[in-house]
Image 1 (cartoon, rainbow, N blue to C red):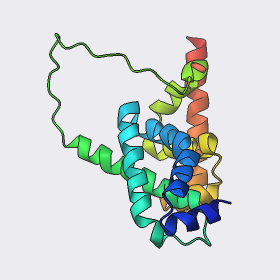
Image 2: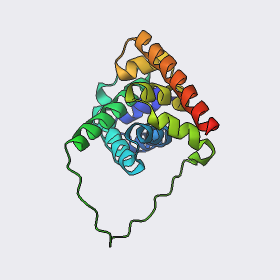
Image 3: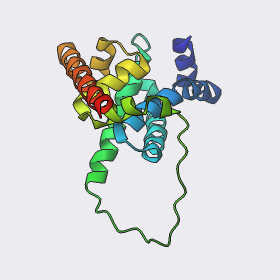
Image 4: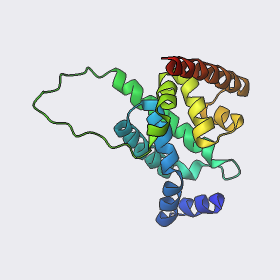
Length: 174
């Protein structure tokens, strides 16, 4: 079904692109939020990702899986944004300006400790963990999306899970 949808998008069907967008948006937001650690930033990154997907869908090989291709673009956009932000000099915020609290639509409250532990991981471990356990990627899909050797992915997943276990034990002991 997804291949048929992609072929329609390649032929300029905007409704098919909307369906593709709807199909991948929620998971893309979760991944981008986990990588950038900011929901507003994640929203911008996801939008830019879908723009790039739309512009480059003609180059996509329909004989290959779409998810790794899509998430490679998403991760590249996250990294591009984070690299750009590293060059930005923060300014002081005026105390008189009232900032509205952000509403988290993903209901992470139930898993707050786990979410916090995942956020504390290094990018090299956090991104594969998010792709594997939030998006049900296989190790091979993660390797393709991140352009890594599969053994590297397995190692990062193993080390990430071990680190998560340590962090969660510390949280529960406190």
